Amino acid sequence: MKKTPLHDLHVSLNARMVDFGGWDMPINYGSQIDEHHVIRQDAGMFDVSHMTIVDMKGDNAKAFLQKLLANDVAKLKDEGKALYSCMLNEEGGVIDDLITYYINDTFYRTVVNASTREKDLAWITKQAEAFGVEVTERDDYAMIAVQGPNARAKAHKALGDDAAEKLDDMKPFFIREYGNMSVARTGYTGEDGYEIMVPETEASALWSRLLENEVKPCGLGARDTLRLEAGMNLYGSDMDETISPLECGLNWTVAWEPVERDFIGRAAITKQKEQGVKRKLIGLVLEGKGVIRNHQKVMLDGKEVGEVTSGSFSPTLSQAIAFARVDKDLADKCQVEMRGKQIDARVVKIPFVRNGKSCL
Amino acid sequence: MSNIPNELRYTKSHEWVRRNEDGTLTVGITDHAQGLLGDLVFVETPEAEDTFSSGDDCAVIESVKAASDVYCPVDGEIIEGNEALADAPETINHDAYGDGWIFKIKPEDEGAFDELMDSDEYAENIAED
Image (spheres, rainbow over the protein chains, first blue to last red):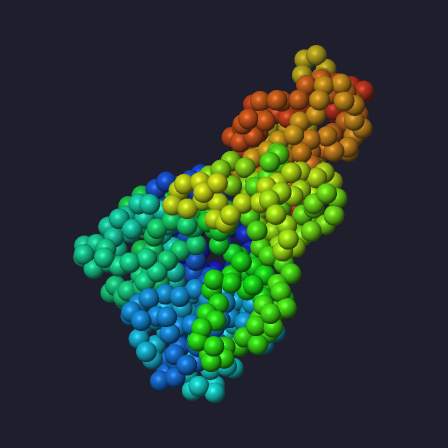
């Protein structure tokens, strides 16, 4: 199993380690729920070094990404600005979702999922050939996500004396160099914070300084409940290569204008849009007791109308919540089939929680 | 290493069983099991006077991560479910062998307790998992 540069530190902190797409990663350091609350209320950190950083360089880098991604990097006018996008196949299915950072006109950096690393690198490299764009995986970097309302202030103290001065004015969804690190004001929790790309040889030292500044280590279990509450999709659960962005709530990430931009998958999803999208992704809150789980059936008056794609217990709301893919006509109520029983659930707007507060 | 008290008996499905002075048995899940499940968020306990056979599922515990059945370790009649767990399921995480007990049962056969695994056998059993 693969290990991140922080692996020994996790073990020394008594983390419960699990196989996470071939990586030996911390699921929690004791209590997943406590870790969840720390990030909603204070500051916590995740080792996300298993995620894949890919640099794309070349004179045609922009044109290449305009072809590769369903969102349009031409929206990125300011250096350091980030863009969330799907990368589609020709059939309009999602190969992966990713964040692209605009460093300059000939240099973009993307962060893709760990579980999709090989196929993403193969696909990107193949598409890049025609554009003469150089694609480089940056496995020399580790990555630490520091998240929560106090995350940035604590991270500044851990990073260095001039960190507050150099980073404090950076707006959300931007990246900036700091020494030999790249600091992005992004995350996967619905809270403010940073994702810090740090040379792997310096990752342990940074983690230790964050610990000294009372940033609590949090496992990937909490990361999952945080992203679910925050209404963020998980690749492999909420979408995959058979699902288009129109069927997983990511319509907003598709840049339809300008119409001349011929991104991969455009023809397929245009056709799907014209014919009418039959399924949609919704948020559910369980009315009864229990916890909604992935793949449970969504029912309406005895008829199956969909399936849960991400279900869990929301520590912030103290009730079960879920994303489900259902028939487009489903309105405000349904039932979830759980352990042989049908339990009432109501359809709600996504997200469930933002900046520590319930959106229900 | 998880905590496995000597005075208790155990099942392969990770229940612990304590023999009380009046011959009744108290049942919960082991420290090992709660660690695997993670934070518990929901517990459904059996009702008094329900009867079960050994191996029947008689309670449900759900963590953030997964749902799990609790199996009855012996044939018998339920005396009491631990209703306090409904509002505080995390008690099982904090005190698996104490306040985190799940139900009390009157065994049909008082000798059934002695048939269960002792702490050494249980420790061996989880080492093999």
